[in-house]
Image 1 (spheres, rainbow, N blue to C red):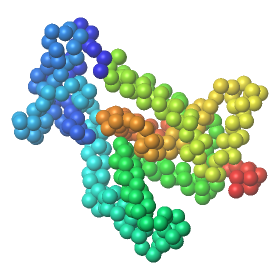
Image 2: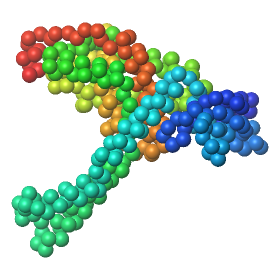
Image 3: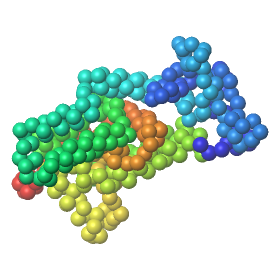
Amino acid sequence: MPPASADSKPMYAKDEKALCFHGELLYEAKVLEVKKIDPKDKTSPYEYRVHYKGWKNTWDDWVTQDRLRKLTDDNKELAANLRREVQQQQQQTKSRPTATSKSRKQGSELGSGRGSEERHSSVPAGGRGTKRGRDNDIEKEEHFANRPSIRLPIPDQLKSLLVDDWENVTKSLLLVPLPSQAPCNYIIDTYYNEQKHNRRPGSADADLLLELCCGLKLYFEKAVGKILLYRFERLQLADVRKLWESGRYPEWEGRGPGDCYGAEHLTRMIVNMPEIIAQTNMDQQSITRLKEELTKFCTWLSRNSAKFFCAKYEKPSAEYIESAR
């Protein structure tokens, strides 16, 4: 967090009600005391002693500003979404075997008749290679399972729109009209311009908002042609790319996927973010913060879906359908 200026005031006042992170969840809390972390340093950031509503006083805690959130309707909804997501994850964990037990079960299956052909054809004499190979496989799978990841609570409205989108493209052979009336970059810029007023300039929260929006734009540019299109849409991308690259159409000059594709494809990317993040080297704290920001973005996009999602898909020509098949 950037150091506070000498004349800066604390963002939260004594006796103010707020939301406070404890682990992955947000709880309602009350600010009991406010002080600078280092009283001798005028630029030192503030810390706050909070009491969690409904908890014993022994749980009162000194926390830094990045753990607190204003008690707004949006943040209350965020707290509810995080709580619901953790509950679902706990239920799934109880009903699902661990990665280690699954790996051992798979290892035992490889030692049975199903894997006999592989053993005879590829394992060195002496049989030690089989055990080492299985141990390596188990280690790799456990490493994969232990990588930091997130589960995003996608609002039901967005889930419904994604189902409709899938049916329109894959079943009805329709296409999202391009360029979108509300392209991806426009949506992200609109979100940023609305949300930046809720973040103190120069604060860690403001920096995180900017990083999120820039990151979404960058990932979208890279992901459109690789993971966001259904097979039926790939020919449409090829046609549009010719317009970008030909240089003969001024209205297309300087455009890219983020200036062409809209909310439908942006939402497809959002639901793929857990897999994308799993390929990064982010630590768990950074992932928790990113999950919070993505959840806020999803909630906002769901509330404004009528503004951004196209009202009517278009029917391509018979030549397009034949070629796309």
